[in-house]
Image (cartoon, rainbow, N blue to C red):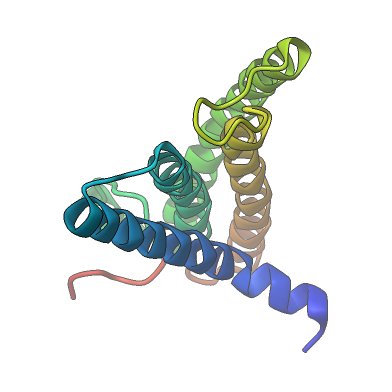
Length: 170
């Protein structure tokens, strides 16, 4: 398996693992410091907060990839493969449009932060690193939506069942 294929398959999973481990370890250290030494740091709170923000945005992209976002799909059970594929394509196109607009406006926020040199209160590093979570998340979503659209168009063309993701409760 090529390196690019592995990155495509596992990128979000590994990024989520890194940010989750960073969040848990920092939170555990901060709780111990607070309980044992009656002292906590502002940087620990910031690391946990920003790790959680990255977790949310990367997780959203991973959910797009696996079609795991919450949705009401009662109608989908009554549709044939072609209608189902068309409905998924329509949903992905709408989501794609929203993601493009959100990416643009989130980059605007990053640009303003960069321009004025804002820094975090505790870590004293550029806010750009943390504000980038939103455009990174939307860029990953756009990439996954493009892949999903291609996959669904292939299913529509070939008449095969459309990918619906893994079922949570079946």
